[in-house]
Image (cartoon, rainbow, N blue to C red; front, top):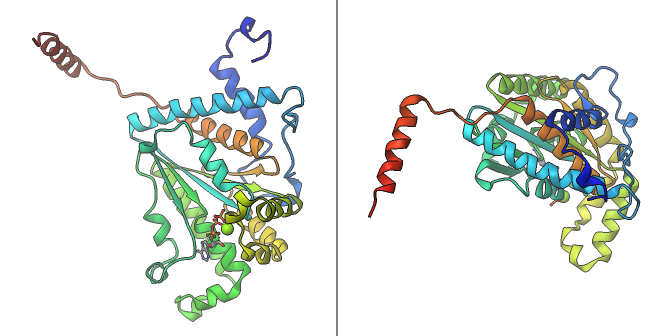
Length: 315
Ligand code: ATP
Ligand code: MG
């Protein structure tokens, strides 16, 4: 806290929300029109100083820890109200910080109200179904925040970049046409509309790391023993397809950005900023739902009073 902070009045919720909105609108994509990935800077920190020692960085840290508390409070209401669910999808190139972001953002949240799923290569059983099957089974229940660490978007990313994956799928050959990517994207957009019409709100995060920063992080995984386990030489091979992935991401975002299920292109070269922006987006969404604790009616109130009398009369 700064020296004069105790003299300041605590900011009103609406002021804090307005501040968050100012930050978020730089990164939110609600329509694919004119969308280009290269217009987004992976190193952006929305004007906050980048380094911890620079003056003003403390402010960002405070916002982050307040964000964790704020999210915890909102999640409690989401759970108690038991009407809406929130699905947060995380997509990114390797080493963009998906795992760390999920860990930090959810650090204050009651684990009972949160469901996290990581999606890897599909199993034989999963391949015996339509592509959405395995994701659909993992959707959050009402009152919960669901996290997808990778998601059905992989079906138009890794599968699109590596044609041989689709070739090996058991889909009828005549359905494997050039149009398949557009068709899948259309289905995903429709699916997200369907979810939002059911009270399952969707937020999609693309953690936008630069190619140079990814290289730095891979090298750190090789050089620092504690990070060795995170390194996979397959990731370096995948890096060779960088441009193909950027193109596939751009097409996917363009085709599926909507008001009801926006994409956030989160700058990911500075981990602390990634966390701050993601938490801000989740808080912003939950605040828009006007979540309230259920009210008890007269009859329930009378029952509570009766129970209280009973408890107090215990010997
Ligand atoms: P980390 O490397 O940080 O542990 P990760 O999400 O990269 O996390 P990995 O086990 O390294 O996890 O990789 C999972 C792999 O599974 C990714 O290469 C991803 O592209 C792949 N994958 C996910 N979904 C699909 C899918 N539907 N079809 C094919 N491959 C998929
Ligand atoms: Mg990986």
